[in-house]
Image (cartoon, rainbow, N blue to C red):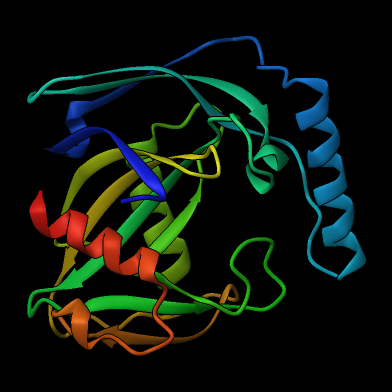
Length: 215
């Protein structure tokens, strides 16, 4: 994957992922701070919610076949909007039905990231004090009102943007019925074979699917 680096590969169960939190917030370099300010201002100019606050940053990690431990610290949420070594933490919950199909949702045009584009499953920033393995389940319920039959934590991945993602895989029954939140204006169950996905499926989504198939 040219746009991502796998830091650690599972799978792990959610209870095998542990976290510790530093008390002090991480302060970004001045240039990164200025670009985050500009990104927030640009969101306000186009009418997108321009909230900012504190979210998680990955400070350190350790992995084995039996466990993944994450050391996190608070930092500005807005740092995830700009390329750089922010190591802002996000959780990405990919969803598959028991027949192999993938849940895809088109993100609403007002969103800060990937507006109007298709993504897999649910994703969101990790709140201060939260275990990212719990973020996976929370985001899935908030975005799609789905409770997984099975959840596994697949990998810790560093994205080219500088964001670090905890990637999870949720399994749901064939009869599962997603209910989209306001962040999505359409959804579909894409075929089990990523080669049969629609033409507007981003190549990065196909690479993510290929990664999960290997784990």
